[in-house]
Length: 118
Image 1 (tube, rainbow, N blue to C red):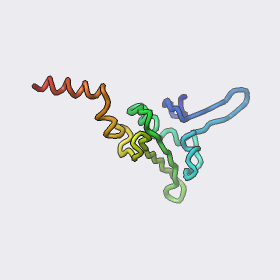
Image 2 (image 1 turned 180 degrees about the vertical axis):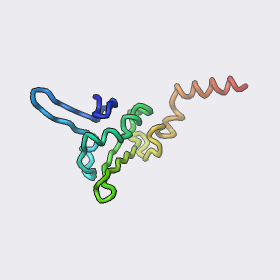
Image 3 (image 1 turned 120 degrees about the horizontal axis):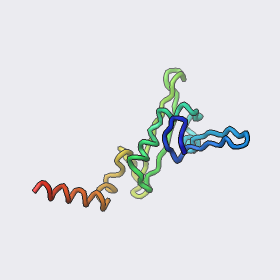
Image 4 (image 1 turned 60 degrees about the vertical axis):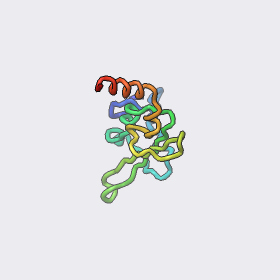
């Protein structure tokens, strides 16, 4: 679904049908340590970009919204976890290093690059 910032995000939900006014980020709602989500948070949220760069089904994201500067600003942090290897992922845009090594499409690409170098 399109967020208020205009990006496609599977964690955003809205319902304005028949007088309802529901807008929520289900990723932020699932984290009890996070502040309450506001539609303005979508403009600075990295989750849609992460999911566009890496669509690994084994990656679990955790979104946390925290206050900064006496609560006048908000910081959005995203942590990624590999359910397959049960380890944190340092760069969620790339994914887990072992997943990158095992990906058959990337392996073909690397082989093609090595052949062109010879």
